[in-house]
Amino acid sequence: MHVRDAVEADAEALAAIADAPSDAMRGLVHDRTVRVAVEEAAATDPNEDVDADPDDLLGFVSFDVRGDTVHVTQFGGTREAAEQLLAEPLRFAATEEMAVELLVIDGEDGLRAAAERAGFEAAGPGPQFEGKATTRYRVEEA
Image 1 (spheres, helix red, strand yellow):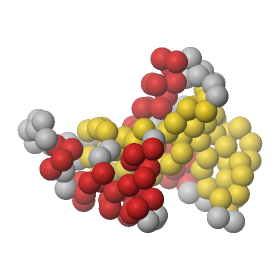
Image 2 (tube, rainbow, N blue to C red; image 1 turned 90 degrees about the vertical axis):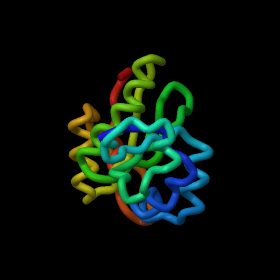
Image 3 (spheres, rainbow, N blue to C red; image 1 turned 135 degrees about the horizontal axis):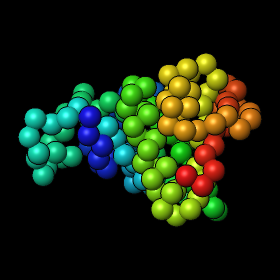
């Protein structure tokens, strides 16, 4: 598995993973830090992000900073990809000496497991999202 920056051409694949409109995911790529996990390439290609097959995307994570906390705004994909991708905001937060937070919709056990394996701890209930309860996860100064 290889992690790289997301590009606009990834919007369709991101939309399929997130069950969101393609236009929203295109905006996400432009407005946030977005990293994607892809199948390992057979050879290192400097144009891999341009030529990538959207079907090779295994997952993604988007994050931004508000105040003194890195907020994971969305993540998804296979449990293994999500777990590896969560290392990206954690690494950024460690460099900046910040905490990291994310929300997991209750019942999304694969994402919950990925968050816990990446070092996040449940920090109480989060806000409802589209009528669904969430749990807030946090890592203090990653």
